[in-house]
Length: 280
Image (cartoon, rainbow, N blue to C red; front, side, top):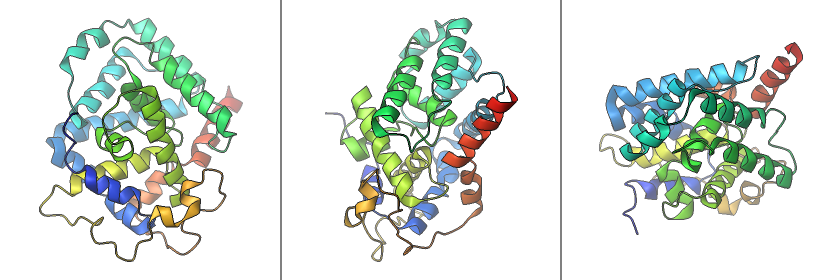
């Protein structure tokens, strides 16, 4: 078995905490942790990926990605996690037409999908989108999740190694392992409430892992004596529940980052897509 990624223990601790303030404070340091991980390169790539996400989400003629955009997101994935240079030959062998076609079909398959849909219907739609993107050479579940989480952060988390180990216990880059991770992130996003998405939950867990390695930062997952754990709150692990885990007891710490993340909430994404479809 491969050696665990450093800091995974902190991600595991955070995954069991329902206190919104703790999650917000940790996730708000995501950008700092990108800089700490890979200096300016990763930060610049992350900004490029966010710009791509905005363009895809607001496209009026059918979202898709080009080969250059494919390379940008893969560069980001390799810089954030473990680089896999041997995959570049396969990835670059995809034609411009095949990249545009696979990404367009994957994105289109999600246009009318909402997170409150019946679980069977929702899981089928998510699997279809992942399969459609994964037809590209050198692109597996982890890389597909990078694109899909940018396009629909409410439905998809990114398959970070630290998040994968947090929920699976090992790095298994399989479709079942991804959907187990994704289900866990979606459940926590619902429990944390407005402004939280599956992707944002994943970012929070990754940030917790990185923060625990910084000597000049406090590991809030170790100092949360007043925080309730997810397992103590049934709503946090019940995807059918209509109430957030806090049940009004935990006040959300509102920050500028919360306001920015609200643009990626289910309602905001669905509203943008509905307006786009009406214009079309």
